[in-house]
Length: 70
Image 1 (cartoon, rainbow, N blue to C red):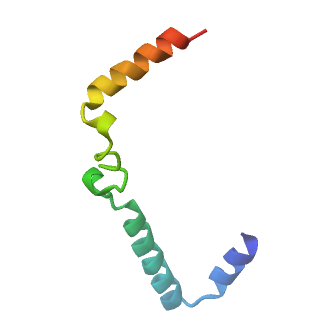
Image 2: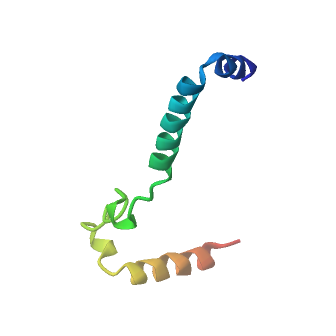
């Protein structure tokens, strides 16, 4: 990290401003939120028969967990 700081000190003001602007653009792009509906996990089980009634599936899993708990 120290080496990086030394290199930054060697940049001209204009070059440093350009670098900061590029870094800010990268951070803004990373911070952009992807809508949940666009996430690849959404709908990945839509074709599974046991997921047609997901609430019933969850209830069944919970019952099994309680039944099989030590």
